Image 1 (tube, each protein chain N blue to C red):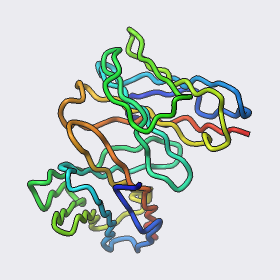
Image 2: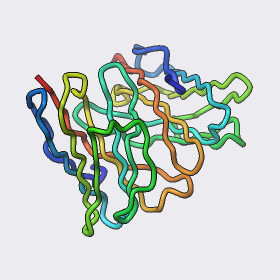
Image 3: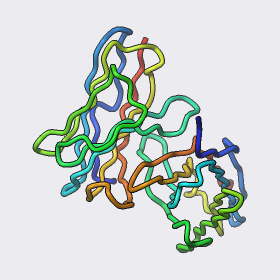
Image 4: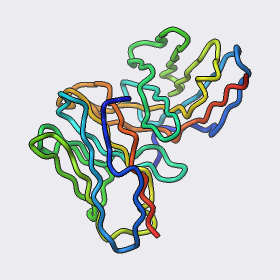
Length: 111
Length: 115
């Protein structure tokens, strides 16, 4: 049973525009969320995280929003750049360090 | 470069065989995690070792086993391989014991193909 879901397998965005990647979860015990970015032939790399006590966390061009009532997480990238083209994984943590990952969304930023 | 290394990068083998995947964590990291990513699936947590001791098990099959050695490198052993075991296997490491939330750093993965 997939507790973290990314329902859009792919997304294409023009350079300079906003990219919005979405993630839904089912487990109300999740209290920490992360986004990882993955380039081909590499492992996922940590991008940004948010605790369940917050609803927004910003780091440069990347902002993560958390809507606990809807059990929904989103990652906004503004402005999008061609180097942002990668697969983005949403992850949630239950307890101290039990990670659950989504299936990923492949982002293509068109120059 | 995350500092986590995994060998081999690719592995092709036949059903019924046994393989060993190796992971070296970042310098100083004591925790090693193993994940499996099958086609169209998210990363599935398999097992966590801290300083040589098993700390948590996820959806790991009985045919799979792992260990962490005194030099902190870890090996994932997969036996009686089936076609469905074909996947990307990632190793990740972190500095702590896994008792509190911390970022995990991933290796590049080992792609296993079972024919």
